[in-house]
Each structure stands twice: as C-alpha cells, then as structure tokens.
Length: 360
Image 1 (tube, rainbow, N blue to C red):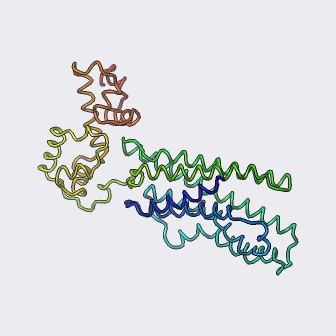
Image 2 (image 1 turned 120 degrees about the vertical axis):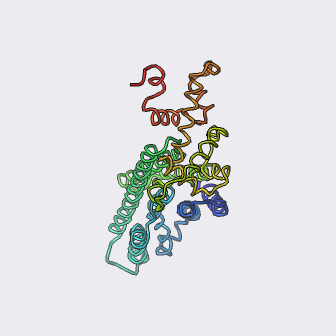
Image 3 (image 1 turned 180 degrees about the vertical axis):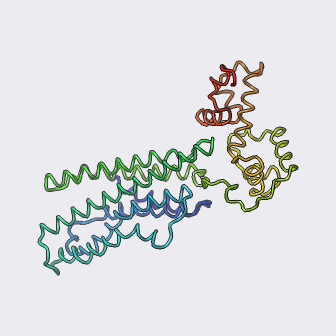
C-alpha cells in the first residue's frame, strides 16, 4: 500500500520538475535520475511475483542494480546542487562501476545458476552471494551518503565564512539524516534475515515506507524552495575576473547614492539581479563594481547597509521601544542567525557587546 502512491508520486514529480525551468539543470537531471531510480525500484517491488522468479531469474534480478545507483545519484546530485565542478569522463563513470559489476555478476552468473544452466555453485553459495551483494549495496549507499553529507557540510561552512545570508540548503541535513535512518532499517532487516535464516518483512516494509517519505520530503523541498537551485559558486567574481582596470569613481558614487536614497537593502529577498535591473546595468557589471570597487561580495555589501541602518535605529529615540529582533527585521534581515552573523562580521562584536562596551 505504501509503494503504490510512492512510485506514482515519484513519476509525477519527475515530470513536473523536468517541465519547470531551472537555472541548475545539472542538479535537476541528477535529482530526477535519483527520483526515477527509487520510483522504478518501488514499482518493481509492487509487481514482483515469486512464482516467476526462478523461471525469469536473470531478468528479475536485473532491476536490483538500482540499489547500486541510488548512492552515486545522491552524491552527484549534491555536488551539482552545491555548484561544484562537474565530474566528467572516467571520474564520472567510475562511480557507476559497482552497478556494472553487479549486472555482470548477477545476470550472467547467479541468474544462470538459479535457472540451472550453471552448476559451479550450490544453493547455499548462491544465497551467500546474494547476502554479500545486499551488504555491498548497503555499504555503497552508506559511503555515498557520507560523501554527500561531508560535501554539504564543507560547502555550508564555506558559505557562512563568505556570506552573512541565510543558507537555503539547510534542509539537506535532514535529508541525509533520513538516508542514514533508511540505511539503519535496511541493515536491521538484513541482520534479522541472517540470524533467523529468513527475512522479516515487517522491517523491510518499514524501510519502504520511509523511502516513500524520503521521496516526498526531498521532492517537496526542491519544488517549494527554488532558491536552492541558485546557490552560488563559492568563488568571488573578483577572483576570476581578468579585468584588472579600476572601477570608475562615478560608478561607485552612483551605486552608493542609490543604496542610500532608495534603500533596496530593506527588501529581505533582494538579489543581485534585481538590484542590477533597478540600476539599469548588466548583472556582471554590478558584480564587478561590488567585488572590485568595494572589495566585498554582494551579500556582505548589502548586509553592511542593513547593519548601519540597524545601528542608527537602535541609537535613535524614535524606535527604542522595539527589541533587537524587530529592528533587525526592519533593517532587511529575515532571520536572527543571519543578523547575528552579519553584525559580528561587520563590527567584530555581537550586538550586546557593541552597545554596552566602548570600542577600543
């Protein structure tokens, strides 16, 4: 009952995401591959009939290769989502080598043993081989999920060091934890099967229910958080910009005047493209002015104005009845954590220290 809606929803969400226009198409492709991989596996579990297993063993065993594809797709999706350099050629295909080996071993060797065409292994050895394959599949999922989570944590740390803005990819941590929970239930079912000599279908059923939940969770987050597909490459434009000519003073003055008079930083969701449109200049030109002219990235440049607006409001008599968080929201921040990081980055102290201790 859990698999039917899971696989249908997976196919439907894959179609919707493919039709929707996204800037990070590579991440969407890997995500859809992951979504379809799990959906197909669930569909095959739904239509599985034990009576046909031995007769069509080499065909029925083939879809289990998906177990070796899930981990690589999670890892590659994470890399693409975080704008890391894409893997090409042998570096990419190497991650699919276990799946290829699985197809060759299972379909050309174990499958033929089950059909009686080969007799190198007895049934006990065949069952042992299947247990080793399942253990290898769990190991693959665990290793790749671990690699993906490490990649995510490294990116998040670098993001917070570079930007004082909220990190929209926080939900990925919950997704990785969900993957490890799924792996734990899979491992529990595997251990029970080894100890008892037969599988405990209650544990495996729970595994599939959680798989459906994971699919819903990840797909919903990708659909409802389009900003996740616009995560920045963690490298300043100034670092890669080959134009070393100084930014004209007139451009610096025009941007400063616009920020002080129009106060676009009060919009908590302002993006560099929107600011460039308001200034009627190309995005890359505005990025160059901020990076080279002010020596900052876009988020820190905007947050600097927000912090100064907050300090002015905090020191003024008109808004003293508001608390710190209310003033932070009025200044353009959309979260307490983003405000605290930006304040410390701008002033070197937290708000309490700044207003209670003299500078020195």
